[in-house]
Length: 259
Image (cartoon, rainbow, N blue to C red; front, side, top):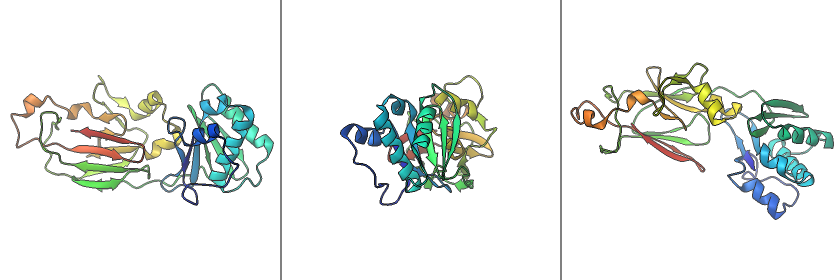
């Protein structure tokens, strides 16, 4: 239930001895993703709000205190009333919210609550990337592997001539839009975030691959539909069309797309 993005001692922090149930909730990837440091940002902790709200009150308080320790390094300045405010935020049926606690900002987005020592992330600069190559993802927690696989009938291909031109890998920006495979029209990626219930703090670092300013691929939402062409038509032009493969490699994600 707790996702730690970064902390000292390999992500472990001193805290009360966990019961078997609380230990499961703190480590089960289905309930949380743990405390991690985003790119250019301070350590943060994410908690599954639904799971937290369903726990016995005493155990839920212990989980929140543990999360505060992971984010801040201590419980200094944190009182019982602060813990109760976090639990009240988690108990909301839906929506966003934000709390300011001593040395800590607590945010709610969809089913997640995040504890972070600062709410101002540093922008990540776009990268020029080429195939084949492996590049750090804008999210700071995974790698984007771009390769040129062997040609096969199972591989979709580009509608335009490739010629090994460089691509741009960056985080999402307001206004980004494209038509993913399986969709009948363009969509703002912001709207896709809403559908997929992606927390607001993850969006600026969401990996997007572009060519000449046009979105080719976005993590989780896949390839642009106009790049996927019927392979029988492409077989007539083997010297013009080539294939690329995009794979996200991280401890908890491994997805692959070919185009």
